[in-house]
Length: 259
Ligand code: F6R
Image 1 (cartoon, rainbow, N blue to C red):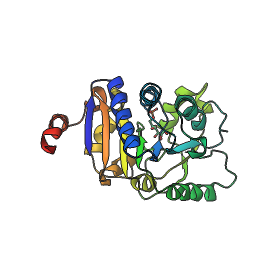
Image 2 (cartoon, rainbow, N blue to C red):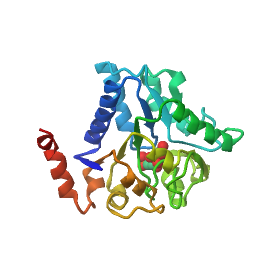
Image 3 (cartoon, rainbow, N blue to C red):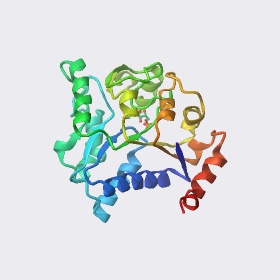
């Protein structure tokens, strides 16, 4: 895992967007895996700026989102479909036909989950997957106890996730109890992973998934098994890493080693 520590959220967002820009520039028809939530909003703002001011071209890009609340129509303001259009898709030149956000209102979820996996495979697999991390260590909506080999499935949300996400809804009881989500196995199949986390609130879980044991109780810990993971943190989120100085040194000296 490569750990990059940014001084604050703005720098984190610029660094993360820069990694995505490099991917899209190197391979214009990249398949990007995308996340919702509070953390990536700054990254998406920076990508929009790069599109508007620097001509970053998304016309050949394909996207797959990680998850969606079960029961919310795409037009619902709290649906992840709506979020992605508001915060990114409406402001860049991605082809609407290449956008994939799982449906929260499929009539047969079992076959829909299988078809989502097939669509990812059909697109050639995901080149770069953007991830956030939940307070309980989840990636996508893979809550504690989810199999580390899981594929796209319906997940029952943990109480902590419901509490965390209540901030986006009028009332806590409006937060859906179920979500459709890529599985941990689906995520481990991608070519490269970019996980971002900010704020002191994430410091414990960040230290646990990077430096703790691999366990289905912290599904993000499975990323230790992936050969190409970059984690971009701000200082507060990185503050409980035991080997913080080592990560900083390793990153700062990387260009020298490459010579
Ligand atoms: C969202 C997702 C979740 C979030 C996580 C962190 O698509 O998959 O795993 O990344 O819950 O959310 P924030 O960024 O709001 O702290």
